[in-house]
Image (cartoon, rainbow, N blue to C red; front, side, top):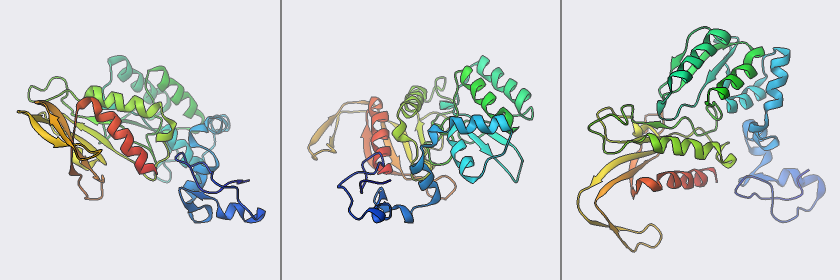
Length: 292
């Protein structure tokens, strides 16, 4: 079953051919941890990528059945949460980067809530919309209807990068230094188009703060990009080799790291100053290091 030991960056088993036949599986590892020592959730991810669970969703909808613990975990990768014992039904959590919806999308979400949910929706702390009391038979209907609106819920739960937030008054705030919405959308689409950025060790939050009148609480995120102004030419040090780097006047992002929502640990400035156009690449590189 496991012809090689060790792992590559994508978590696949690889390395030198194992010896000993029956002991191969015991020596195989996920990111250096033996399979018999990892959590059940990591084993589930190892056995089948949760993003490949569409057939499971179809089967549950066809039989109108509730999921077991494993399938409940997998379905959260699609933004469908079985929320028993609070409610014997599913909850949909969308991904709405920067909290932006157009009128047709807003009406479409209301229609989903009326037709498949309890007629109500909740706004979350990360600018998401959640709809509750969805019967198992409707989980695929809800997801396809959502996609038809140009929206997605993929990766909105468990071990994934959650919805990307931006300053709530971005784009019309006279005080802001930079409109953060384009960066939130760019980060959103980067994640959606890179499967290796799903299945992290835990949930992960990224936020863009533009310096406007209403704060986005970026320091509660794993990565917070904080807009600042460099008024005059300055000098910095290259991260690559420490050599001097000229910093031209303009707007940049300072990078705060390691905030944990709900755990009273606030992100701290890590001394990085990045050009706005570099922010998505910096975040993606940090995500991949975190996954390793």
